[in-house]
Amino acid sequence: MFKTVLVPNEVPVSAGNSKTPVEKQTLSKQNVKIIDGNQAAALGAKLSRVQVIAAYPITPQTPVTEGLSEFVESGELNAEYVAVESEHSAMAVCTSASMVGARTFTATSAHGLAYMHEMLHWAAGARLPVVMACVNRAIGAPWNILNDQQDSISQRDTGWIQLYARNNQEILDSIIQAYRIAEQVYVPVMVCYDGYLLSHAEMPVSVPTQDEVDAFLPAYKPHTVLDPADIRNYNLVTLANPRNNAEGVLCHGYMEIRQLLQEALEKSLKVILQTGRDYGTIYGRSYGNYFWVDGVKSAETVIVAMGSLAMEALVAAEMLRKEGQDAGVLGIRVFRPFPREALARILKNAKHIIVFDKDISYGNEGAVCSELKAALYGTGAKAVVRNFIVGLGGRDVKARELAAAVKKSVKSGSTPQSHPEWLSRI
Amino acid sequence: MNNPIIEIRWHGRGGQGAVTAARIIAQAAYLKGYRGVTAAPSFGAERRGVPVSASTRISREPIKILSQVVEPDVVVVLDHTLLAYDEVTEGLKPGGWLIVNSSRLPQDIGFNGRFSTATTDATSICRELGLMLAGLTLVNIAILGAFIRVTGLVDVESVTRVLKGRFSGNDLEMNLTAIKRTFDITRVNDEG
Image 1 (cartoon, rainbow over the protein chains, first blue to last red):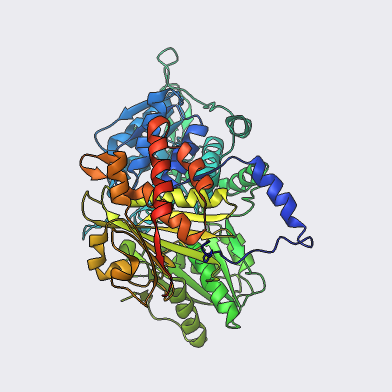
Image 2: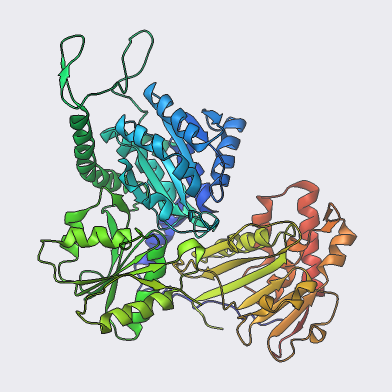
């Protein structure tokens, strides 16, 4: 009757494509939901059986708090939901609840995260395995509610592990993994994902069953629990040098405790890798590295980005390949601890590295670019590293703009870049 | 149109449910076997009554592109008064489809020759069925009948399956009836 005009290119399901039947079988077994990033985060926390949630709503994180409070209200999630008056208090509740042995969760964005800043240091310094979702949003001034990664990058040095998700599947998966990582190394974990681009965009997400998550993530068993029946102190005033406590036991000074935090983050690299590999046993999704790559090993030109921006970069790389330009993509998933050695290894043959940052360390350059350059220093890597600042405050980033920036960079050859360039679409 | 990704942009006013429509079609397309589907609002704050938009992407392969839709294959307009704004049809591909909730004929809405156009009077159907809330007709689901008929990307069955997850009882029946009626009365001018 009416012509069907809008059929996307059929992917051949020919007999020669041996992957298809297996994929189909696996897919049909999975519980796939079409959900947005915030729903994925709330589901991830629920499946992790969090016991205390304290959060304050802020755009674009709000639906995470709404979703979790509904789970608690309906009895689907057996947790205490503490409606606090600020993000500072949210993190204070999470750290306190963590000290008495609870698995805790919060979520925030932008100004909420900035307001939490002091308590982020407390959570990490006290070595509490708090997990939070940061829905990345620009920081004022000027006022803006849209996406960039300046908020979480500004918390880089608080001692938290930072994971960045590239899609909604990774948001759900990363939150579940975050608890297993945090509770092994006693370092809090921030799972970051792009506001709106992921938080408000629905896409297919395979949701594991509660049994599968329970098998992966056992109940939290803290090494120490604050309990009136067994009196202990947490976070004492600690002097510069080690000294004997009242019981005559030689205790660390402030600096030893801080050095242990650094060592914990360094050690967490192995734990993150192992956790990702173990998680892969659920449905065969692999988190076997600190970053994911597409065509990087053979490419002379490598695009580096973090979060959902790396997905757009994949489209840019496809455009470049069609034009005969060889380009790979490296999407960073683990930003803290920074996987220096693994990055240097995989990038050792690259000639051009183009780093797109949705953040900037004002007066210098994008944070991802600085970190990457530092990782390559002294390894013999010969790549020219160029930096572009993109997508601040929700500026739409198009694959063709990324591709144009890459082409421009390659043309510049080995001429060093004196300062980061701003990719602004007008 | 032989694009690997079909892009649909929805225009309505805050409260009309453009975002919900975008999501229902994404979910229905997934049920039809499209592995790549995304649905998103235009990014930013929304308020009742102001022009809002949303988008759906549909593909056989998982979707990597997350930036805003700027060159849609299909534009669906829930409120015909929005046609006064250039941004509603901005970027719509030549030969793409413009689907409008309007009592007028597709030849009479002023886009002859530029796009294939379809009109359906979803507002009247919603009034007849009493699909109203706080004085607003709930056209977002009714207009899916026109979308199904024109694009063939999803069918009544897949949309019904999605709606069963959102509605039950009388609400479900009324919305399904509305979809079937708009499907029947949709008028098409595919000389774009």
